[in-house]
Image 1 (cartoon, one colour):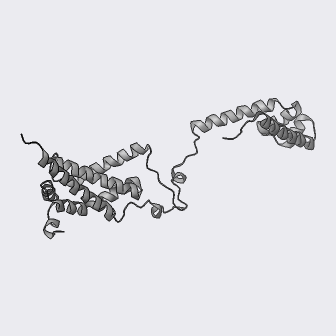
Image 2: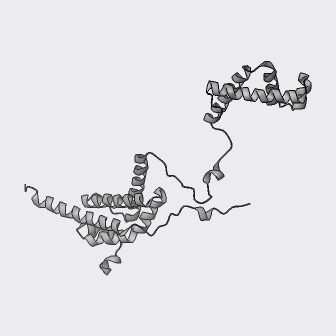
Length: 196
Length: 46
């Protein structure tokens, strides 16, 4: 590569290339390739895709320069960066996705930015689960339904349930056990999924 | 406890494009020039 060209400014090289000097383009690519490639890679995080976009960028540069529509304003690099930026956007539009950060080691971005507020979907599922469970409870025998309701919805202890219903703690525990067994049977019969 | 996440930052600097990418660009440029030259020379003169 000619040493004299290496010292030339971008504007001089661009003019030289438009006038047919292929070596001027080689100098421009060599001079700016790292900055442009790293810019593209910082957006796509994929070496192969970055290589493709880098090549496409310079193909656009070559076509524009050779068509004679490039206006030299001493801003060759910003212009090329803008082309590569547009191609990166095109890439994401075509692939219909946004850049994905892959978790490395034990780092997970969602551990930092995640919140505990349920989204609309999980709220609806939770509501559905509660409604399904309530329907199943109505199908239980009275004594079992009574114990289950007191335990689940009134948060009563088995001692309190026993005192309230006039039975022993063991009986209350037994009714609760049968209530759970019967609920499981009803879930299987109705093929209900009780999970969010 | 404050955690240091800097080591987990995605790597954004590379050693640049491959030589093959650069060669392809320069080859495209030469081919483009050759085609343009042929096109110019075969244009009917007015």
